[in-house]
Length: 327
Image (cartoon, rainbow, N blue to C red; front, top):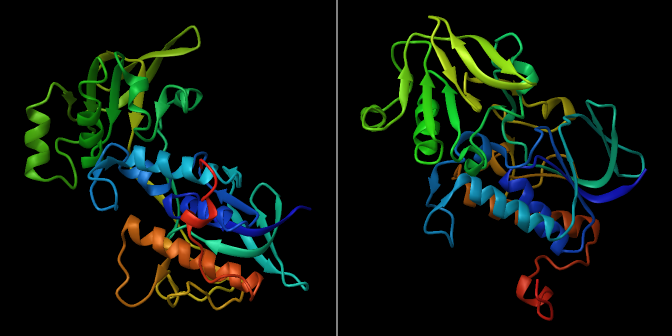
């Protein structure tokens, strides 16, 4: 079985940046992400929103930021495994670690970096007969790659502010946007959200649910609502809430405090060779920001490097490493 120097659990922005920095340090690196795609909460929760508190970007959408971090990570060629969840972490007699995933896979590594936040999540699926056949093709659970909706009829199913955000983000890109809300009001909204929705061209259907999917030639062509209204569409986006699964860090032997991993500035956990960064960790004056995760990722990888080789440099500089390249 192939051995890696660093295996990162979690392919969000923190995990991906850690993969880049680990590769830049010359460490053989793997990333394991339980979702089908990388990007983490930035991609899933606010891909359409502008982010203003990351250095070097006066403003950038969550989708663009996640794509940039992924591109940066790929530049150092880490191994990437998606769609599987790490179920156990076991330290072997030789000091290496065995990670076992829910598909039965075994992953061997000399160090581990936990960057999987407070636990894993799954989007609540659309509970309509026949809908599952179109998931990933025409039914989606995040607004990713807005351009694929250009000129197409699109509907959003949600009773949450997220549905308003998605609908407004697609307005002007999609040919037509319909927002379907099972209730007579939206949850977790601000007055400005509702004002923006009313001022938009989005068609809102209150107190309605999707009764069934219309299809023709193997494609979804529309939906029939609970009152019999037919809505032709090319794509359907769904936000019906999340199924959160608490972290299993304690089961791995990693000490936690209210679900988060206490660390010092070196990002070391109680298990030698296991490090943590991002939303998973807690320390005095911790800030829950994307930019904080980048710094913690570097600190964790530097600690992993010196754990593997006490003679290794405590940190490295890209300007030195890439001095004679066009990287």
